[in-house]
Each structure stands twice: as C-alpha cells, then as structure tokens.
Amino acid sequence: MSHGFKITAALWDKIHHFASFPQTGVSLQQMVLFGQNPSQGTLLKASQFLSEELPVRLAHRVKELDELPHNLSAMPSIERVKNWYAQSFDELIQFPPLPTLSPDIRRLLFSPPSVASSNPEHQLPSSTPNPSLEHMLLVDDIANKNFPTSLDGSGSSGSLASGSMGFYGGVNGSTSGWAIGNGNGNGNGNGNGNGNGAAVEGFNKLKLRVPMERRLISIQTQIIFHSDWRNRYYAAPLSANISWPPEVPDYNKRFTKMLETIKTRHDPTVTTVAQGVLEWKRSQRARHIGLDMQQWLDRFYLSRIGIRFLIGQHIALNTQESHRDYVGIICTNANVHDIIEEAIENARFVCEEHYALFSSPPVQLICPNNLTFPYVPGHLSHIIFELLKNSLRAVVERHGVGNEDNFPPIKVIVVEGKEDITIKISDEGGGIPRSAMGLIWTYMYTTMKLGPGEGLDEGFRDSDFKAPMAGFGYGLPLSRLYARYFGGDLRLISMDGFGTDVYIHLNRLSSSREPLP
Image (cartoon, rainbow, N blue to C red):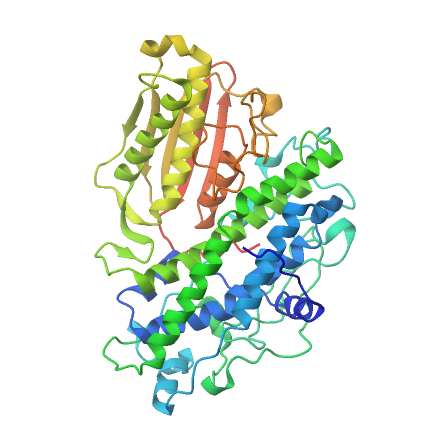
C-alpha cells in the first residue's frame, strides 16, 4: 500500500494544477468501437489518453478529500485514502515518457482528428450528455426528499442549509467549487480546457481557474492539440496492419503494469472510506450523515467507478485474448437473462447460508432468453445481486425462518423499450415506512439488526461489500451509482405493509458519456 507516503509541498502544487482541468467523459459506445481488435498503436493512444486523464481525475479527488466538511478529512482512514490517491497520481505523472520515435510513426500516432476526418470509418461518434446528471446535480432529487441535513440526522430539507457543501460548491461556503464548462482545449491532448461555460443554476457560479502554466506532455511526440478531442475517446483507432517498433509494445506493457499496481492499491477504497465515515460518526456521536456528506460520497464513489472502469478496460485490452463478444471488460452481447439468473443463484445461496435455510424464497424470472445489449456484466450482476439480497432478507424476516415452505416468490420482470431495458424486482417483504424513505439511499444506514461485534470494523479492508447478507448500508446507494454510470437509473417504490418494487433502468443506446463529478 502507501504506508509512509507523504504529500510534499511540490506534489500539492502539481495536484492543484491538475485539479484545475475538467475531466473528460467517454461513452460505452466509444470504448467498444475504439477497442475492437486494437493494434499496438491503438493501445499506445489509449495509454496516452489515460496518462493525461487519470492524473486529472485523481487530482480532483485528492483535493476534495483534503477539503471535506465537518472535520471528516482528519479521520485516519480518510487520510489513508487520500495518500493512496496522491501516490497513484505521483506515479502517473512520473512515468517515463515514450522514447523517441521516427517521424512517420509519430505522424500516425499523434495526427489531430482532422487528418482522419476524410475517412468516416476512422472517426468515433460523439458522446451525449448523461441523463443521470439531471438527477445528480439537483439537490431536490426526489430520492433526497426528507433527507436529514443536520449532523445528528435530525431534520429534513429539500435543499442544502447555508454553509454546507453543495454539489459543485466549496466547503463551508468557500468558493472552491467547479463550474461545468465546455473546455477549450487549453493545454491537454484530450481537450482539457479552462472550463468556460455557465454554472448550474443554484450553485456556486465559479469557473475553473486558468492554470498558470500549460502542461507539457512529451514534447518529443509533437502532439497537435484539437478542441474537438473533448468529445472523442482517444480520437480514433489505428490500423492493425502497421508494423510498430518494439518501443511501442514495450511502453504499453510497462504502462499496463503500473495500472495493475494502482488498481490493486485502491481495492479497499470503498470499505476504507466507509471506515472513515464510521470514525467520524463516532467522533461526532452522530446517528446518520447529512446531505452534504451523502452527496460527497455519491461523487466520490461514482468517480471511483469511472477510474476503475477505465483502468480495468485498459488492462483487459492489453492482457486478455480477443473474444468474439468482448471488448476489454465490455460484453457487446451481454445476455440479460443469463446475468440475472447467475445473480439470483448467488443471492439465494448467500441467503440460505445466512439464515441456515434449506431453501430460500423462490425467485421467478420473466425475461426474453435472447435479450442482449452492450454492457459491463460485472456492473449489472452487482446491481441485481445487491437488490435481490435486500428482497430475500425482507421476505425471510417478514414471514419467518420457520415458514420456508410458504415463502411468497420474488418476481424479476425484464422489458426492452426503445431507450431503456427496464428490470423490475418485486417482493412481498413488508415494504418500507414512508418515514424511512428519506434514509434508504443513505450510506451507512441499514434496517438490519446487528448483533454485538457485528459491523464494519471486522474485515473492513475487503475490496467490496459482497459476502455479507446485509448490514453495511451500501447496497442501494452503490447500486444506483452503477446504474447511473452509463445513463441509467434506479428507483424504488414501497407499499408499507406489503412489499417493495425496485426499477432498474439501463440505457441500451450506450452513447451517454460518464457522469463525472
């Protein structure tokens, strides 16, 4: 890990500099088209993109981790995570540049998109805004109604109280927020600009500061900056028929090795941040977290999903054998029926183990056998698994462990629409009282009764919350983030006294770019 790693003053200067650039989102569609049968030159362009984009994303997170409200930044586990991000940032910007290449190879690698525009086959389609941002940018998100705003979890409000940390606002009313800009290609090969553009109405209307110096990226490559790259993913793939010099695959191999190290370092991030929040709750004697902290956790975990997705996709493209249905970790023909069926088996197994049941509540799946679309199977599996665990637990506890022969079935219905694939999970587990609806999306909130010694402390370094039946309060909020990452959403409707319906909307068009906080 990063034991003993310290952020120096010089490193802080670099972090603040990189954090002044906006992040560049990519779409599932762009990643699929770019990564099909990639040549070493295509993989090198991917490496160059990540060598520019990942430091920007990491810098944003380090800066935010250092400026959290209510003294959360001082918690030991939060400090630990901040140092992991800073160390990974430092390794990326210190990575040795590409060796000198011949002029012809440089021209192939680093020509601006306009050079390839004469051939439409070599252009990637532009991404579209992520519809999830409409919900995530609004404090009055319907999911946040009746959300506790005070430190002890009492009180509710549809908007943030004065002095709190808004979605793009600074800490405690400070002016360190980020505006949403259009980027003008000011200094980065991927179009990172000065953030010119109107801020979201109702939030701090600040623009990103213009960096005092422009970032120099491997002058040897003679990159020609192009403002349209902000809406492109690596610009365009390169032909597999080119004979690439040995320096290119060697660079790709070394860069991928570094990314593997970074990915492993950040495996326990979710649980370590959760531990930091728990440390804060104990220090403040708070029952629940407030809306400002909830929104920060949403931003932070969503950013983590994006960073790990980019890294995981790059590692897979460089290390895995080509597969007819896969581009990296993206399945171009993800079979919804098969993924849900596997998640059902896994969730029922965990339920039977937890409650010592011979047979857990039955799950009826109504889904076309041949329904496929481009998606990341791991993301969909995670969402279904977590939601089914909730439904199974609710049914068992509502009807009693001794009544396993008469458990009502849980129904999973899948329908394909023009824009979305919608999955509805319905249970008869008693539902959720209206008074608790404002808390169900809260991190660290759970309706499960924990016994002495149960909780997050034991084994909190595990990479994710997968094994336990319930009890950590992360299943619903993280599942919603996974759904929103590629333009979908997750909604919940409860009938108190009967059961709960959860709707998962998956964007089947795959052209939405990442919602970057």
